[in-house]
Image 1 (tube, rainbow, N blue to C red):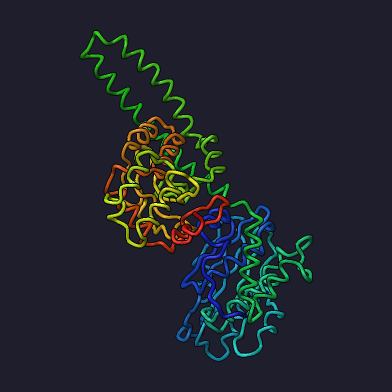
Image 2 (cartoon, rainbow, N blue to C red):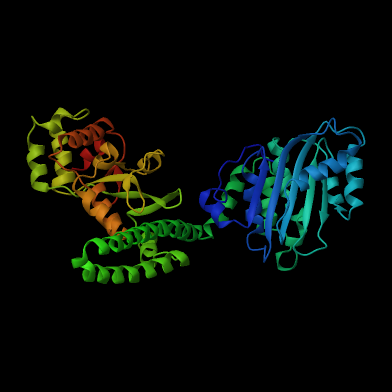
Amino acid sequence: MFKERIRTTPLYNEKANFFFQDIIDEVNDKPDDSLVSTLRALLYGKLGDTKFRSCTYSTINVSDWGDNLASRLADYMIGSWPRPENTTALYLAGIRNVPDGGLEKIEEYFTSRGYENLEKIKRFFTKGTQVRAFVKDSEPGNEHAVVITTGTLHNMALFHTLQCTLPLILRWYFTGEHELVRDSFDHNLSKVLRDPAGAESYKRMLAEVAAGIDMEESYIRHTLEAFSKGSLRHQRDSVKREIQNNSQRIDSYLAEVRSMMRNNDEKRTILMGLEARVADGAIDEELFTYLKNNKTVSVYKLSGNDTIVLNFRTYLDNVDEEIAEAYIQNHRGTIYENNRGFNDDDLEKLLMACLVDRTMKVRVCARMYFSGTDCNRWSDDSLDDILDEGYMGSPHVVGYDCKGGYATPIYEALAHGDQILAFENAIRLVASLNMDDYTVLGWFIRRLTEDYNHPCIELSDGTVVSPKEALNHI
């Protein structure tokens, strides 16, 4: 019965919600994220061919519902969320201002309609807040339970204690090989839910469940399927337009008829292949393997229907060493004009070690989006999560959202459907520093010397230290 409000767990986030599409929670005024997380932890591997939905109402005021209290409550809770076929359910509500005799009317209503009133649950909650649980599980695939409490579900102690009784309420899932036994995972999860100091243990148990599930693969496949479809759709539409234009030109340029008809035949063959791939919805397995195994590039999210957002983590090693050395040794140039936190000699030592001698490495990162034809810095979300891993922003991408000489190869690769080549060129862009671009070079030096306590320098043994600490290792 811990009181901590649980927000965003390993079993309730964007990737988990995609993986657990068969276990969802439809909520009116959600107390916290614990219920759907608990349900997924308890029911994972037990659903068989069924799906599960919980429908939660945090607080319902029934003070003026009169003699029809029970029927109105049942219609409000169950009738508002019609269940699809082969879907079991939990309907949960906190009601307040219950008139005298109201709970007895509710019990009479449900038991008269074939529900079993769970006396164990009734006896478990005997002090203060009252709880009633009704179960109808006679029809396989249509089992459902109704749980009503006289307290608001925003009372975290009550809300979490209710969850410890789920194996008793959803009993049709806890039979046979899944029967609740002492010291099992289900039993221990129920124990921590009613422990006043159980919040950390609860989070740890959810993390253990998540660690045993490969949600990443299904999420990447889902993301790439949409992204690949978008890319193929752009190629398909481009080929369609070319065929239409060529067909119109045949009438005007008779001399080119034979050549253009051959071109149309080739394009139609390509179009048939593209149409088949779009219809199949198959993702590019080579691209999937590339992103699955790549340590430099990782999938961040899908934006819209066909735009993928990627995280890049690499080293600032795409630098001309001879030019870098000349700039570093010029103490009257751009580098030292932008020095904010070091004496010039120390800055020279640090830059020589990182950009010329390569005894240390500057760790850089960026977040970029790619669509069928476009690529740019992703600025909708903060980059702090990657920076906090021990990186600084890529000078060209994060500093000024410029692609320089990499724009052409990236866009050409996207236009030809070669996403891997586009991503590889983006890696080189993120890892680059054009010493002749005074604006970008100045930005890099200011970030390096102003944030001199921010870890972003990797030593030869793999340790990540701040620029200030790095001087002690030169």
